[in-house]
Length: 91
Length: 146
Image 1 (cartoon, chains in turn brown, green):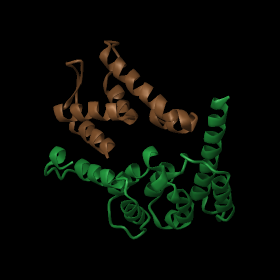
Image 2 (cartoon, rainbow over the protein chains, first blue to last red):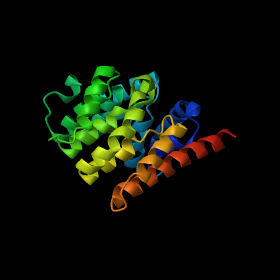
Image 3 (tube, rainbow over the protein chains, first blue to last red):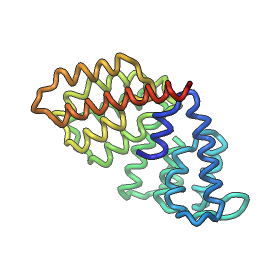
Image 4 (cartoon, each protein chain N blue to C red):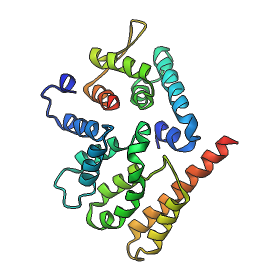
């Protein structure tokens, strides 16, 4: 079971949206920091937590640029699968 | 979607298109997609149908998708008999309604299991797993509220 399913199924329903928002920001922070952790699994999880208009706008920009950028700094180059995953979240 | 995918007709693009359309907040589209994913005579690939399943539920569309929580239990017996096991497994675990769990949902699974022949072990054990998943979700959510 992945992190997104855990959040969707095992915390009170009325806290899911807020926790998804927090996890999105946490994963983005992890991506920004040079922790030595592989970045692919972080990016794979990140899109599952797009949960508000701000995240959508951010992800839309990443999709168009084909890279995750934060404060003008490139953090990760997105492949076609990533871009299509973002696209499906926009619907 | 057109701008991003252009004329990409790769499998991943086709599946993403299907997932996007299944995710549209439109009751008519949901009804159409539901009929497609429940069609036991479908000639579409498991991947394409699975993509539609993945796009079907959304937390932001509870008003449109909640009628399908009851329909889910109604279609299980036929789908389990007439669909490839792999597809049925995806259908069951992806669409098992954990967003709104009511006691009668658990009762429906228990009832289905009671009416399943002993030799149909795959379906029976999947139903048992579903019962346990729903109870576990309910209990953990209640515990987390304390």
